[in-house]
Image (cartoon, rainbow, N blue to C red; front, side, top):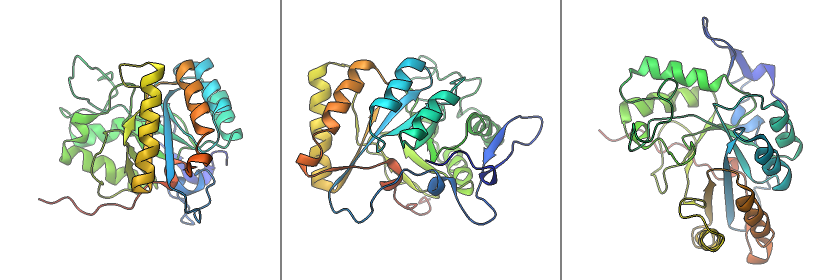
Length: 272
């Protein structure tokens, strides 16, 4: 996996700090340059897995990066700090990774993604794009963005078309893809995207229930040709079950695919 390329970065406009992803002058885009390797000629049904919450617990995050095969996509929290070691381990293990951008979820304020930085329906588009830039400048080298954020999925902001469309256009202009954590959400306009089909570690979380959900994910891939699962937090028990299950994919006639190999082109303009 490529280290962050200076040609794919630009300074965050002052007074903000850091760097933002961009499409390079030669046309190279982050969603392609940082994508994990995958054989597109494979005819096997594809199964994708996103493991979120990376960076919030260093030990569990490093375990996810080192223990899981490279076809698993990691999702790094915008609130994570001191993640250089984790991201280096992810690239060595051939993981592509996403950035988790906090967005207003259902049930706010009881479900609070930290409204000091999260994208909120109560803010203007300009303010939300400023907050998006803050998140985008936290790390580098990611293929795209997701609205997965722990148990929250940014449903309220993502359901406000006037706000969400501005976010999607900004991501597209920077050559990023979008992984939608809202289960079964329709295809989105403006940006290459893919919605999650099953959340593996939603409550209740037991070994048997996780196995049932992984079995359902495999069946869905066989029926539809592809399926995408989400793990919200890299818990040790969850990682153990994922590693064992991934080892059975070949005998099930499936292939593990990174999110970049599952995304679809923009679904077109929204209907009025």
